[in-house]
Image 1 (spheres, protein in one colour):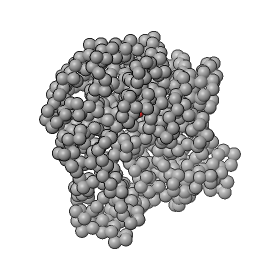
Image 2: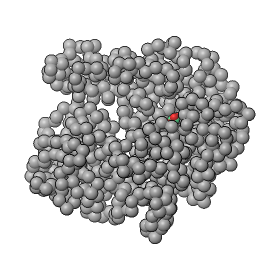
Image 3: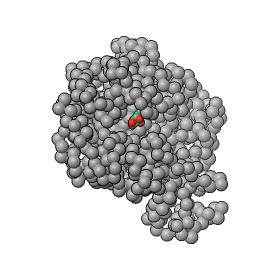
Image 4: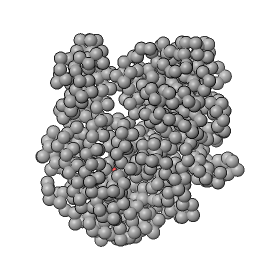
Length: 636
Ligand code: GAL
């Protein structure tokens, strides 16, 4: 885990968007604002290689020179998320195809299919060219590969390239077609195949495809992202020792980020709190209006903790930080004054090495002309700039934020997202929403959290581990969960890796005699009360076995069973029940918790406790008073 690193600010800059005469002044203004990193290049392929094989790096050389001479450290991006138009003449079949069989055309970005071998090679080739030219250049301090894999729903592609690659992938995974037929249960509805070449992609079927088929396609699609990424990693590694970074997105779950992260040094992500609140959260209208100009109080922290787990040795950044209104959500309000500073400090408190704002100056043209930057299109400062400057000044007096292992961990598993998206059994069952509910409940009790992948086999040092919704529990994790206080469930270990029902039926935990014999999904507004405590919503399970019942619903049916420190939870708690579960489990394992006031969140580092007021009203707590959107920290 990173510790004691100097924290720094950065900014995303597009020299190719601006006249060369203003680059030097831009660079000087960045430096005087306290910015030390600048990311460039990730969309500039048409300017780097205007025709196949004709490279024009003179402008990029000059931009690097100007920025580095001003004292900025450069992150150079490979431009592979925006292949130029000529690439389509070379590879007319490189475009992704959506589930309706429609080709996704040129004219925006991310217009490629991860399975297209020719485009994959072309991506590695441009990475190689850039690596040859700049790999040993000391002014390039880090590299970004591509941009936001999977954004704009680009992981699942139903192209011909994907179909052929899928068949090869199946042949490797199952070896014989009989093994595939058995694993998927293809005897059902006479879906048996005679050869791998007959297996199509699981779209445009009359009714739903076999869930095993659909899940296999999702696993394959994730592996294609990893393979595409690996090709670029290998190309760059040959030329540079500088850290390699990818900028992941918020709630893009279609590929396994832990797998992508394995081959690069730093995980980063793009944090758009207000965009995400309106665009990608299951929340009530009241919640959305309460946090309209702040963003959800747990969404950013969740991703900070997730990407800290994805980064090698806990190294992670925010590569893009929302600086003002964005353009892409249904509605785009401005952040409350103070929020840009709050988001930045929150990232540092979770261990970010760099927080980089997107973008320096608002573009006056094209798709993102309504997206704010630190400067307005007319070059005047936008409100975000002063907040960035304030953080820069604060960082100078408080340079070190040391991450420490949390007492509580939450297991996050991408394959569970795919399994439950494939077989939801009820519209309310969204794995991510379940995870965020659990995370939120922990945070509302003032806890700091580490996120662990399901491949974890050692939970030493964690007093409490939560594992909701892990579709298939690896044996190693099962054993590890028995070593600490753990709450497993709901819907844990309920299916095999092939998305079939196992025998014995789940959760099949060592030392806990409980079987989930029936599940029910509940429509919105329907709940099963747990008297005096809260209720179960969305999802409820019938638990049988000799394990001790530790929570019951109003009908006396088991909601949770336990054996010592290990509990299985057979339903999706509402917020009151979550709070009870967390308070009770924390008390049992010796963790102090306290309910926080509305909108307040905390984060502990080795030396400090940070306080973030996401509420639009002032708040007083622990002897501190925080204004709306206020941040405070105190020595622990
Ligand atoms: C990100 C992307 C940036 C920019 C930004 C706008 O998803 O990486 O290039 O489009 O969103 O909010």
